[in-house]
Amino acid sequence: MTDTRSSLLLRVRDPGDKAGWREFDDIYRPLLIRYALRRGADSAMAEDVAQECLLAVSRQIARFERRRSFRAYLRAMVDHKLCDALSRRRGPTGVSEETLNDLRDPAPAPSELWESHWNEGVARMLLRRLHDKFAAHTLQAFEMYVLDERPVKEISAALGMTANQIYVAKSRVARHLRENCADLIEALYGVWS
Image (cartoon, rainbow, N blue to C red; front, side, top):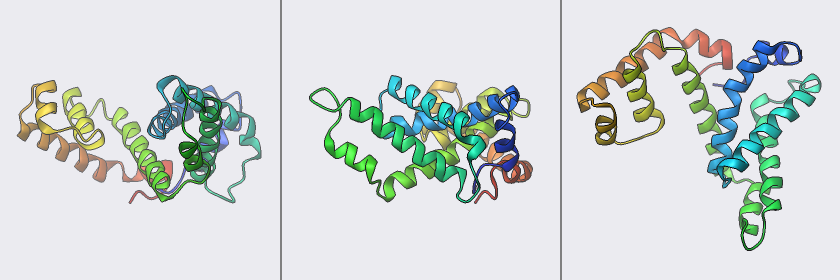
C-alpha cells in the first residue's frame, strides 16, 4: 500500500461531507490509537492523541498538498502530538527522557511500526467490508491468527474451532482478499505489496 486515495482527501476537504469524514475517521482513528499505544501511551492518552490528530487534519487538510505522502504527514503529526502528550507527563509518574528522545528522533523501528500499523489498518478495514461474504467466526479466526498473531490453541479455545478450521479460514479469507480486493486496495491506497 502506498498512500491514501486522493478522492478521500478531496472529500474531507469539504467539512459538509459527513460520510467522507466518517469513512476517514473509521480508517484512521484505530490506526492512530494503536500506534500511540505501541509508542508508550496509555488508553486515554492514545484516544486524546488520535482526536488531536483528527482535529488538526480537519483544520489543515485544505492546505495539504501532495508534495509528500499523506501517510508521512500523518505519521509526523502523530509523533509530534504523542511527544507533546508524553512530555506533559514527564517526571516521577510519567515517561522518561529517553522515551521522549526516541519520539523526537525516531529510529527505523518506529517507521517500521508505523508501516505495520498502516497495513494492519487497511486489512482491518477490508475485513469489516467482508461481513456478508464470510461467517463471523471465519473472519474472527483470520483476524486473530493473521492480524493479532494469536496462537492457534488460543483461537481454537475462544472460537470453538479446530486448528484445521482456523487454517482453512485464514486461507479462504486471504485468497478472497488477493482475488477480489486488489482493485479496491489499489483504489483506496495504491498498490498493496
